[in-house]
Amino acid sequence: MSAEINVIGLNLVVMLLSYFWIYPKFCGADIKKIINNDLIATALVLMVVGSVYWGSGVEFSLLFLSVNWFWFTLTTYLLLELPFMLWYFNKYDVWSDLDN
Image 1: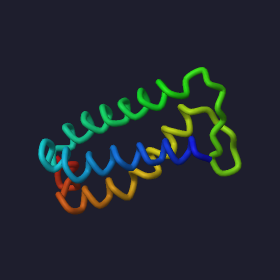
Image 2 (image 1 turned 180 degrees about the horizontal axis):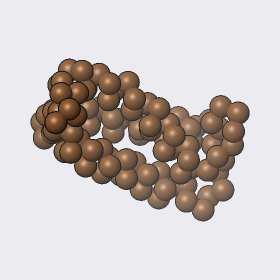
Image 3 (image 1 turned 45 degrees about the vertical axis):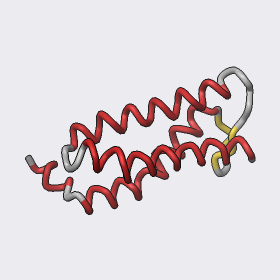
C-alpha cells in the first residue's frame, strides 16, 4: 500500500503546484498553454514513478485490479486531476476560450 500512497502523493503535489501556481501564472485561460503544460506535468510524473518502479515487478492495486506502475500512475493522475481541472476552468473561465 505504501507504493500506492507514494504515487498518489506525487500526483497531488504536482497537481497542486500546477493548478495553484504554474497555470495561473503562465497559462491563464489559454487552453493551448494549459494542455501543453499538463502534458509536461503528466510526463514528469510518469518519468519519476517509472524511474523508481520500472522493472521492479511491483503490482499496484487499482480497486479490484492489479496493474503495473504506468497504468496506476496514469489512471490515478487523471481521476485526481478532474476536480482540479473543473475548478480551474470555472475560476478562470476557460470554457469561453473553448468556444473560439
